[in-house]
Each structure stands twice: as C-alpha cells, then as structure tokens.
Image (cartoon, rainbow, N blue to C red; front, side, top):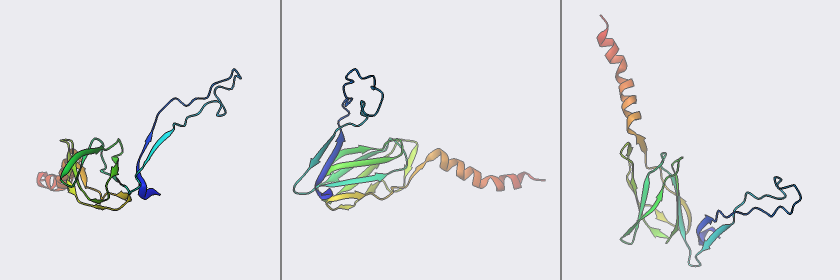
Length: 147
C-alpha cells in the first residue's frame, strides 16, 4: 500500500477527552496525546522522498518534467520528507545557507512508486572545515617556530 501513499500529515487538533468530573483528568484514561492523521492515497501510485542533509535550514527544490517547486526544508536534525511526487525522474536542488558547503548540490534519482531515500549531498560547515585545516597545519607552524 505504500506505493499509493501520497502524504501523511498530523492534524494537531486538541484530542483530549472530556473529564466527566471524575478527578482522573491527568491519567491516560482521560487525556490523549495522540493527534489524528490525514492520509492521502493516489490510486495511480505516488512517490515520496526522504533524506538527511546533516544540517538544518537546507532548502530542497524538486524539478520534474521541467517544473521546479520548493519541496522541503530540513529540520533541526537535517531530515526532510517530500510527499506527493509523481513516480519517475526528478532532479533535486540543495540550496544551503551561506555558512554551509554542499558537495553535490544536485541529484537526479529515479523515483519508483513508494518511498525512496535520497543520497547524502555531502554538506559541510565552513567554519568547521577552516578549523580542521588550521589544526592540520598546526604541527608545521609549531616546528617552524622552534629554535
């Protein structure tokens, strides 16, 4: 059935049960922390894409059949999900914040019906890279300063 799934969204409605005056309002029998879901199914099949860019706030654009659209923004862990894609060839474009370098700013996976995991685009924090380069050259700098 996952080949037909085109989206899953939490409704985030207040699903608390009425207390009924029993005094048990704070127990699991009276309060729910579960939100209902809206599930979209496409009978002709649907594709979805999941991935991780390692950093937050990376914008992922999706191009298919000559049409490009913003598709997702990575969350705090770098994860992203793109729903409701027609199965077939797509091109992903990773647009990173200025403090981030991406080795592979585009990817072109073929999406079958169902969920596909995107390849790691190779994101690196610029300041961390500079620090690593400086640390790597530190022994040579120290050796040059010795009498």
